Length: 236
Image (cartoon, rainbow, N blue to C red; front, side):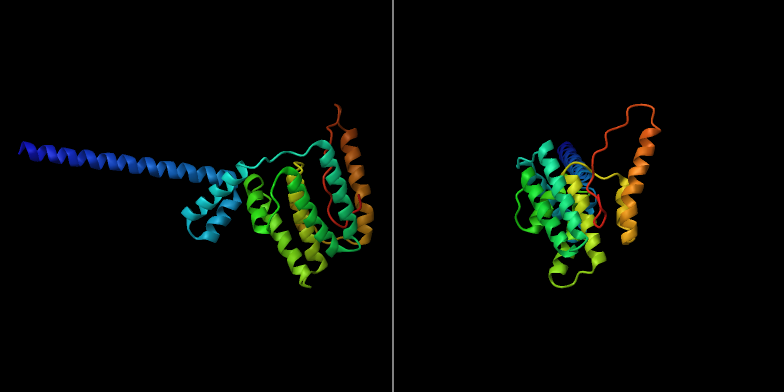
């Protein structure tokens, strides 16, 4: 009887240890999932939905993170940021007369900025995966813009679609330059109607007037505004 009791106690002890180990593994996996969800944001959900297997999706996201963490990603210096900003304004001006070429040039410019920051510029899917690690909030802009650019090259690209592609490229471009757009402006950019020539002529004047009014009404030293990439079709 004493031997039986000892065996039962050993079995119970083993079960308790297994249960504790199982809870520890579950807690660790849950914590890792939460960390991935926080880091990748909407890209986490997109990857899980695409994989239809959370474990495989999370393994893919961790592999992306390890790959990018091993790269020497660096910020742009002020001179490079100004140079790329000027290039963007030139591409934007091109949009008025040749939207298709402007979208192609925007895609090329994104690649150049990525290369300057230390990202390998391989096939598109790899570029998007790399971007998703440090810029998860805007990587979907990249995918949407690239899809529109591909359709344009196949002869399917209305001007409004190209304008939307340019807006998406702008969001990624600003994030790569580390000059993100204010949330209100970004939301307005995705819902704003196409502008006519008269609107284009009036918009810069109105914007400049609003800025001067805000500055004049501020008693202290006005903040320095970081120049943002402007929307296609609008003169700067």
